[in-house]
Length: 122
Picture 1 (cartoon, rainbow, N blue to C red):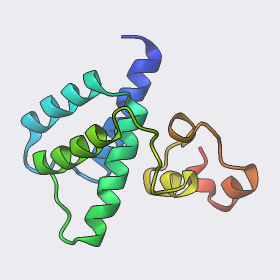
Picture 2 (picture 1 turned 90 degrees about the horizontal axis):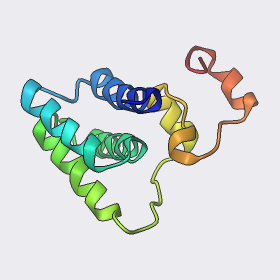
Picture 3 (picture 1 turned 135 degrees about the vertical axis):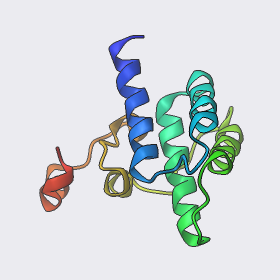
């Protein structure tokens, strides 16, 4: 695996770990996640995870485990052969994940915004 692929996979796993999205479905969850990583670009998966996470916050309690991945997978399938129009901004992505939004949004957050949130700009 190339270094950029490893970094991309680690970003996806970081989002999963940060919000404990695997729930109680440990092995099955990670097998499904690996299948998604083989089928879709990691930046698309990152965006899908975050969008489903936000949707989950609106519909408490938060769904985790395989059911969470199924929702993310359905969103990924709905984006196939279409232009993706994210429901969140690059700044919101950074605030939610703590990750650089450039791989998803193709732009970086202006330096003035980064200085407001020094703990997440690293």
